[in-house]
Length: 157
Ligand SMILES: [Zn+2]
Image (tube, rainbow, N blue to C red):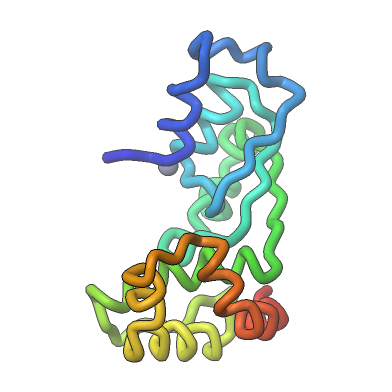
């Protein structure tokens, strides 16, 4: 039931004071879901969200709601940051998904099939598991995979 952006906003001092955050940008790993997006701008007044990656699981949901003008006018402006760190967010998430639900899984429409293939390879050779067991943090993981992340970033839409 937890939603990352709503949880982060709820932890801010002062609670929901929309005018407090009207000049801010919320940075997040994935494009927020519809409920978080509505909370970001509707409750907290944050007009813009910058996200590293499209959500591998729920991508497109905001576009579906944008067909309704009343809702479209109440969503924050979105900026996709992408790049190697965007791919890293995607890879970490998808390796978890593929580990527990091995498929078949349709390639993510915003990342070429090469991205899914690389994620499957990371699951099969337990790359992330080995890194974590060795005490790696996210910076270590990024450094270890950087060549792949740069290559896959070229495949991302
Ligand atoms: Zn959410």
